[in-house]
Amino acid sequence: MVTVIDTQRDVRPRHPEKEHKPANPVKKKPAWIKVRAGGSPVYEETRKIVQENNLVTVCQEAGCPNIGECWSQKHATMMIMGDTCTRACAFCNVRTGVPNALDAKEPENVANAVAKLGLNHVVITSVDRDDLDDGGAQHFVETIEAIRAASPDTTIEILTPDFLRKEGAIEAVAKAKPDVFNHNLETVASNYLTVRPGARYFHSIRLLQQVKEIDPSIFTKSGIMVGLGETRNEVLQLMDDLRTADVDFITIGQYLQPTPHHHEVIDFVTPDEFKAYETTAYAKGFLMVSSTPLTRSSHHAGEDFAKLRAAREAKLS
Image (cartoon, rainbow, N blue to C red):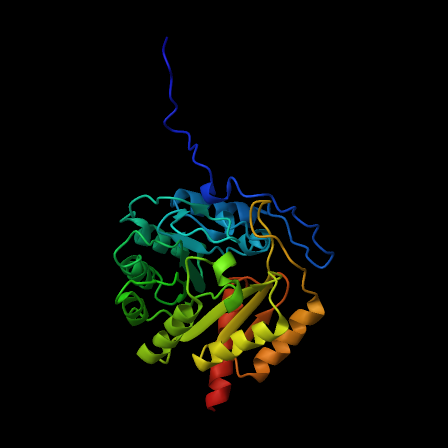
């Protein structure tokens, strides 16, 4: 008897740590959460460029609801260092497991895609790479440098992991001078043990503060999801913590449950509540606020960057 093994087929579960967890039924979305489907010629062109350059995008891996709109405008958020994360956050749809080795050609491939897409502003994010000595900091640096060489007029926004226990990593990335340094808190402090167990709330606050200490000219940004059981007062305290770290831009969006084995949606926050958060955040001193049910970290990032820069100029004038 001959046993044939298909070594090309990826049989790894996407979320092995969630396989045996009890299911949380996925709640029906309210009427105010509507998204545009993909399929336009520009969407297909974007998909082809991503595929031809062997790139991973957070748009696909995280199941972003805005992919149809963004890709139809040639806006894609590149996710470097592979498609497999070393963390197992309860909200996230990115694959969990042991990542492959870094692709030395990836910074060049990302830069080529940015040039082909003709992007004025690009967002680069990554999986967590706790397996690497520097958490992937040098790979971020090389990607920033490659984009600058290929598209010198493109502004660069990075959305980084927390580089927890990776000495010198934050400094290395900040010194590469991205235009925007984004690191998401994701949720309020009381939820970290259940929602983001591999991270530390005050380490993330300190990361954003360090970036400003290294280079005050870099815009800093952070985002959270609501609907995970947080209280309004906890969100307001989080805003204060970010302002203490001199963070410029906050994004607030509705958490949407990827599968029954992910953290459940506790509640759907109404558009009026999002508007109230926006008003409060501006009153607390943020230069830029995006607070809507479908807000995501990189949604409308280019337009928001222009507004952010204008807001700083107006404040200084």
